[in-house]
View 1 (cartoon, helix red, strand yellow):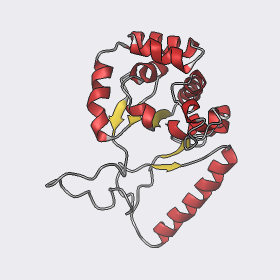
View 2: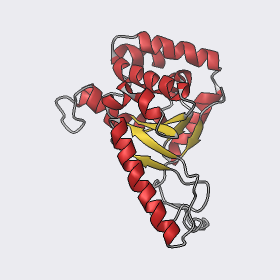
View 3: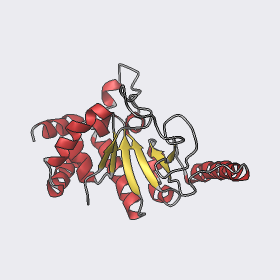
View 4: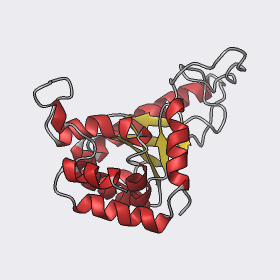
Length: 220
């Protein structure tokens, strides 16, 4: 398995001075998907019926574009965010409906741990290194690959180089992060063999506390 693709998310930091403008219809914030580089994701999906309803609305929008004679990418990939526990529970069914998954670790963590990140009294529980969260990531990866679709991750965990060995070992295909985080994550990937990453992931999944996971990873 090749290492995961690393890329900044759409809507990230603006380009610096002198950077070329985005291609028409291909940048963040609107325009038509007339080329192959734009993908569409539905957020907060928890059941296959929700995906089918969203795809029906998408098909309606496509029909309107065709009727208006406006060009768009007929083969645009359509995926969903995996960010609620129910999506992981039925990930095998959801994978049959879409072209890819993207795990949103920030929301998934707080919902799995029943801990509001904005509440200081329980915010410490909302740590993406929780073994429960890592095990759900593995389940989502296994379901995606069993269905022959790719799976990525966005959120703070994807850009944390401490997590890179675990995420690589779990089989993530893409990691989305802010541009400044890419060099450190790339360096972490280069230091690893896939065999080592899988061993590290297995050790992290076997831990019974977030403290044990962090202690193990920091000791590598």
